[in-house]
Each structure stands twice: as structure tokens, then as C-alpha cells.
Amino acid sequence: MQAARGAFAPANRQAELLSRLSERIGGNAILAGDDVGDGYRGDATDERGERPAIVFRPSTTAEVAAILEECNRLGQPVVVQGGRTGLAGGARPGAGEVSLSLERMVSLSVVDEDAATVIAEAGVTLHAVQQAAADCGLFFGVDIGARGTSTIGGNVATNAGGIRVLRYGMYRSQILGLEVVLADGTVLTSLKGLPKDNSGFDLNQLFVGSEGVLGVVTRACLRLHPEPRSQANAFAGCRP
Image 1 (cartoon, rainbow, N blue to C red):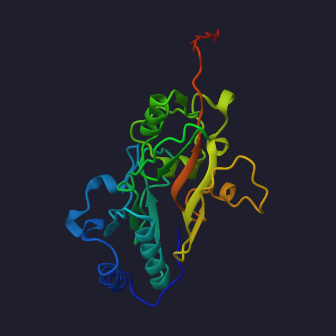
Image 2 (cartoon, rainbow, N blue to C red):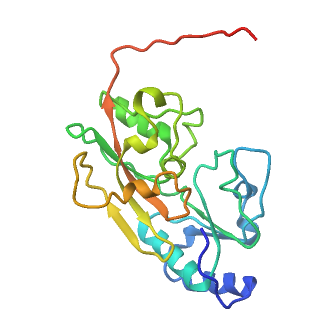
Image 3 (cartoon, one colour):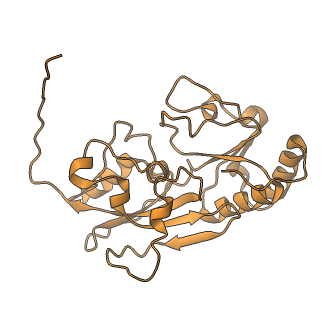
């Protein structure tokens, strides 16, 4: 996510950013300098990006909004990070970027068994959603190998598919509502969870697969399914 260009030199801009945000978000939400671990440089590949000078770790949507508002105001480029399980480089910081890590946003609502929905914050793992559904006799339609570490925000942002895609569709098909923060800190919320909603443009779908370019997903209302009565595996071998 690229904010508007500001008048500060990079070092001065980041110092000003820390000064402004230290008054708006909790101290646990900021890592800077030597406190930034090597893991924030990369993803699931062996390639590494730049070490971000600052890592913001918000725990609420309001904190995400404050961070993006100030970054936008100062022209500070931002890279958004979730579980950092991707292979395409989207979570690798570039020169001069600060990291917005959603790893502390791990709230998961009680499953609404009547509506077959659950609301997950961006840092909740895919496995946690699967387990919550299974505990209620329900089923989540997406599964990928990185289920234990990949997070809902990243899944939405990349429109994850996985091994059940032919039966249940891409991640896009699992979304009933999103909460998103735009680059200027504006919060858009549509977590009604209604399959039938003709109240206007479906803005939710604009953000699915957008890789954080249009906004940062902070919460998602997810569709659950009846648990399959049986499952079977098959192996198909092909001659070279």
C-alpha cells in the first residue's frame, strides 16, 4: 500500500510517525530498530526483503485506522503482513517501507449455528476457523497446506483457493461481509452476513484478491457449510 508522498525525508518521516502514533496506539503495537525480528523481512520462500525500520502490530480496527491515517498523512509507504506464508513476495518489505502486521488481531466470534456464519479478525488462522466450525458440526469450505499459520486477512486478500475449490469455490465464495480500512484511515464495515443483499454495490468483492492495494481487511464474516457425511480420497497416476 503506497500512501501519498509527504515532505519529510525517510528517517525524519519515520521518527515523526513514531511520535504521532505513540500517543494513539498501545506500546505493544510498535516494534522499532533492533526489536524488529528477521521474520518480518520475508515470507515462506528463502528470499528476504529489507528489514523494516518499524513494525506496527495493531490489535483493533481503530488502531489500524490510526496507523494508516498517519502513514497517509506523512507519505509513508506500508507493506501489510499476515501469516507471511505466501510465495509471491507480497509480504516482503521494500526499501523505506514500514510493516503493518495483523498478527495480534486474533478475535474469533462464537459461531452463529442458525446462520452458519462466523466473524474472524484478520490475524485468526485458517485452522482456528476450521476447528470452530467443526466444533459446531459445520464445515469451512477452504483448506490449504499452510492452514496452521496462514491468516484470514491474507486468505481474503489473495482470494485463496486450496484443495476444496472445485466443491466449495475460491475464498470469494466464502465471504458474506468484510470490514476494511482504506489508506486514509477510513473504515468500511459490512458484516451483515446476509446471503441476499441487494442494497447497492457489493463493495466486499472489490477487496477479495486485491492484495491490500485497495485497503486492509481487518474482519471477515465467513460462510460455513453442513459437515460432509463422508469423505473419500483418490490417487490418479499418469504415464509420462
